[in-house]
Amino acid sequence: MSRLAGKVAIVTGAASGIGRASALAFAREGAKLVLVDREAAALGVVAEEVAAAGATVLAHPADVAVEAEAARYVELALETFGRLDAVYANAGISGGLTPLLEQSVDLWSEVLRVNLIGPFLAIKYAAPVMMKLGGGSIVMTASVAGLRASAGGSPYAASKAGVISLAQTAANALSGTGVRVNAICPGLVETGMTRPIFDLARAKGTAGKIGQLNPLGRAGLPEEIAAMALFLASDESSYVNGQAFAVDGGLSSTLPFTTPWR
Image (cartoon, rainbow, N blue to C red):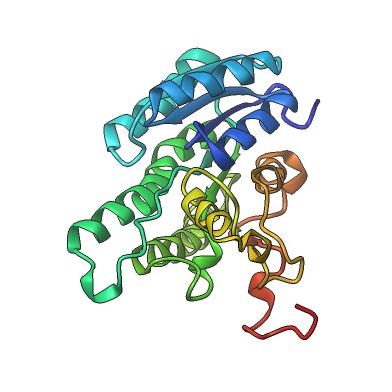
């Protein structure tokens, strides 16, 4: 319980799934936390869980892609805890699976707004604070959909490819400041966003096929993504910068194929 001892961290999209698992992981390792999500009621429940894990926590409902609200959650971390060491910009939406030629500009705008502008705003407002303190870590949730096709709808995939690029460009823009920027590319993980896929498979009796395309042959757990987020937020990753890490059971390591044993 010492990897984040004495550190202050912000987790966005903290009300469920990967954000919740990460908040709990950060709490167990000693961080003081500001939790952010649009879903106020669910966020409050997670804040109670985090407090029960022994952490000092502040829950702050907000839309991460509204500039004033992003600036405010960073400001609250400073006002409440006096410093900011790590931000996990995890909040995101799927945008659904509407066929490409039927997608609207409004759909693209909203997905890009939340999934890409949200992390940009986290960097814009957190990095200057971290720079004054000598450095820090900003972690963003991208996706294997940003690495390869057919892992999500077109707006979602484009937004996550943008997050991967943002990790690279921001890391270089902040060269010499001590602020590191990295991204995580989860594979298929059961969260509130992906639950319809899992529910449909269970209803059809095909739950055993979930994750069959990756070498591990299964879906991931939110806690497995949180473990990577914890590493990147901690000083253990002090020489890791501008990278996008696939945590996907090996899905992105290969081309599609049919295995003879399944």
